[in-house]
Image (cartoon, rainbow over all chains, first blue to last red; front, side, top):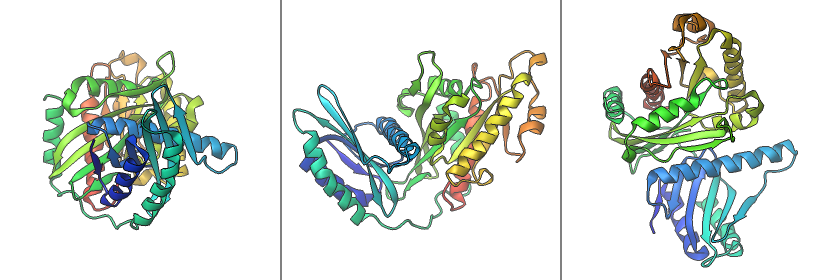
Length: 156
Length: 199
């Protein structure tokens, strides 16, 4: 199983959590569903779908909490026959992150995930850098590359 | 907000297709899904009602390949168009890097288009985003319908396109204008990134 981080500061806390909690799949993402780190997924595209759904669940429950005039729910858990899903927020210097954990019931448990999630949240908070000033990303003449890529994508 | 990984040279951007109910937002994504090779797209996720109306969102990740040395991925979302679902519509807008406003070209739908455009502006404001600072393109869909039923793109520009953003006539069911619209919003989003500001 691979652990991969888009933002490297998330890697060590995530790897520690996976080992301790026995998690099968983990996603660390922004509240808009952009993935910062993941463990256990094999296709980048599958990661994005899971992130979109996880972020949507958190956004929905936060909105319900807002309409009830209460603080956002700390965590959500859904337990199936073989797998469980645990979803929670982590406030960091990079803003609020969302963590999605999928665990196998014969390897791990909700209690184990909850136990080590506190440590993961603390480690992410401590490791998170302050937001950076955006750097220039693309050359000014990227339009040609974009045109070629989209033409190839649509078979034109 | 777009995510840029300088180490791995990757970019991920979120594009939201917005507009009134039945204007063709999901149809746009279905056309893209059908035309893009398997290796360049993920699963299309649709959270819909039993009658196939969008309940929360449709989602399609596509891999644009290398753009100026960055591996570039776009996440395409639609919102539910029905007025009833405004709460979920607002949630999907969170973190959007660009918006495609899909208008229904039928003359009788003009008020719904205007209402949805105002709703877009108001929902963006709730996220602290000024619509004038967000990459936006207009798509005038259903241009394949009989002339007597629809407004021409120039008339729709007059009625809806207050900012003079790029606009595209389209027939999303058969694909006309879908590619051009996606290209248009992609250019605006990446131009904003190239200018050194978060999209």
